[in-house]
Length: 616
Image 1 (cartoon, helix red, strand yellow):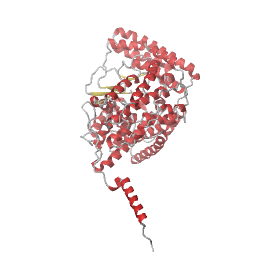
Image 2 (tube, rainbow, N blue to C red):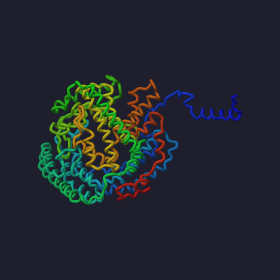
Image 3 (cartoon, rainbow, N blue to C red):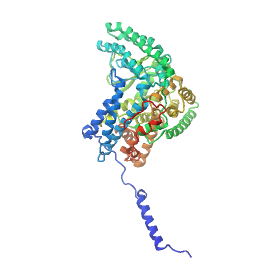
Image 4 (cartoon, rainbow, N blue to C red):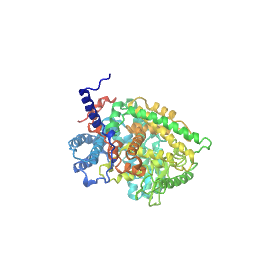
């Protein structure tokens, strides 16, 4: 005969039931309302003024500024003032602040952590020759017209007398930058010296653009540009350019002579990279997790590419445009169709704004070391002007990214609704903290989303169905970028091995042409110059998808994709871990940031031990 529960057993069962009931509230009752994000973004007057004042003062020392800065003096000033700014921030009582202001607080703290990382880890002034080479070249470049995004209101030709004189003065100032390099580069990194010698000035890496050819490149550029100068200044331009080129060439010789005695290391180690990911990028992932995700995304990219290739197996291949006229015709058609497709004339995916001008591409010259330059005499009101390389440039003939094969492959990423659209929108954010904050994972995740979304939602690519293969090739290339980029920053592989891996792991597939050496060099250069930047596209997109999925599950059938897309952009270009708090009311990824770990606690793991004092 079975015995019943004793009185004590019944009491225990009752207590257990009560504990379970109160510890699992969501199992017993359904939440009646989903989280409603804040409608109005607080403006300057509504913010805690102590936070706004601190942000203004701190951001004033954050950059070197224009003209000819004293780089060593600027760094010393930053080292002196940063601890004082950080102490003021840490002393603030934010317990009574709203969610918005608490997020702003974390944004400003991440900017301070980033500057500390620049000062004590990357140490450009003492490690990186490109700082001085590129500063000298860009000091001239800032007076010219062109660039990939020429913009809404570029300066037209001919050069005014004042502007021409500014160019001549900038050329004359070249040695003032380089002399600082010879003095300050006490812990130079061989791999960074290689980049300075191979790729001066930035822009697209081009074989033949090395620093040893700088005099010829400056002379050619000056001969072209002098045609648009006033007569008196035109006579001076070629001699001034040659003199500036000779100074740069002498600096190249100095780098070659000293390269065998360079003590710096190109890598930072795992602990430093992980600290950066958590405290500067405010990511919920470390480098191991990002590597794991990139392996998954690599497999997904290749699989989805194969699915597209199988669907298209009976279709003829597509190739890049034969000339710029053909490409510009495709690009004009793409920009018109794409914008209508996104807006209420099409799928009603997001909102536009009155200040978002039309985007149109046009041809330009590619003049080393300045890159894309234009000499426009015609004003084009209401047009945001994009320049493209001439037909003989390698990016016109051969690029694995696919933009020359079908413009829609990257148009949404780069221009509308990607970087150009996002930049204009974020600069107009009424929040004084967020309007000037940049987050790479938010930015690149949003833009990468707009490479994949047209494929998923059947955008009519102007080159037909085979163009749908190209976004998956870019997805593969970005997964490889994460794997190789993190490996090189952690110190697992070197520059040459990274080049070989990148080329071998991204071969010609489907409509893709394979990554060529110039493209691989550009990406690896970006890893070394950009700290932990290789993760941003893929990691940002993964966070974006997670946020979208969680909001969908909150709202169920009330979820609206247009509303979500607009909200993602509304609250500023902030880390998506913080954006989850704004949109979902979920602060689970914010909580770890209330107990930060200072850089000094991991700085002794740096392989490069020089100059690592940090003020607490």
